[in-house]
Length: 123
Image (cartoon, rainbow, N blue to C red; front, side):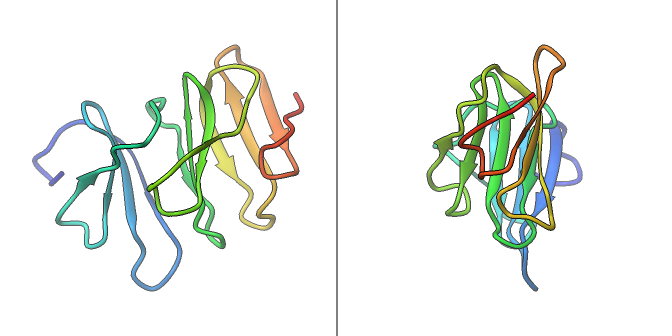
């Protein structure tokens, strides 16, 4: 990815003084970079919606919204856990004040919330 590379749909930065960068790319899915210059595809990342990316600014957990619901990575994108949203998701956001609180917009338009890290979702 570079300034001349089209296809970036979402960009997020992890916590810390030198944060890891995450980008959702149209043709490559989730890509990660430690310097913003060299990018590598996160091969195990689930399919994502066009803007379905968020990073919790305290824990560094990475969240992806997509056709399978919401997925979380606790290891900078190396592995993923499906959080069992009742439908596909378009957007996800992590509450910056509370690690366990998440919000997701379902494909039907329903907004869900979880207060337990995504184990239980409520409309």
